[in-house]
Length: 117
Image (cartoon, rainbow, N blue to C red):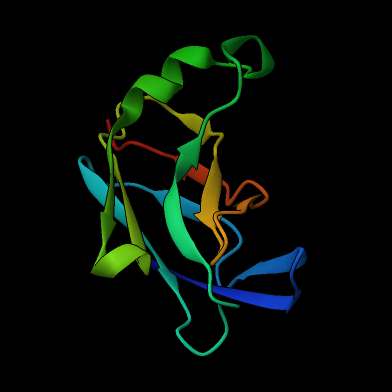
């Protein structure tokens, strides 16, 4: 599934908009592709993700469902591979970098696992 990400406003306070605020994963080994809008990204590129401290997550073991995080298309795409073996929300934030090396962090894009058992 694809989530388009627009970056609006101005640096140093960009606003991140997801075309799907919440994604529900129902299939095993699913990929969620975050794609920057090339016309509305303020020169930013994906750099990775950051996960909360396990004490801040209701079910910390659900973070184990994230198999990998990959950058593609020279940082315009970020893929989160989710094995979807546990039910619940995977909390994380996307990290982007700016033209001068600045670092920006989005709000949680809300990935919810609903495995079919």
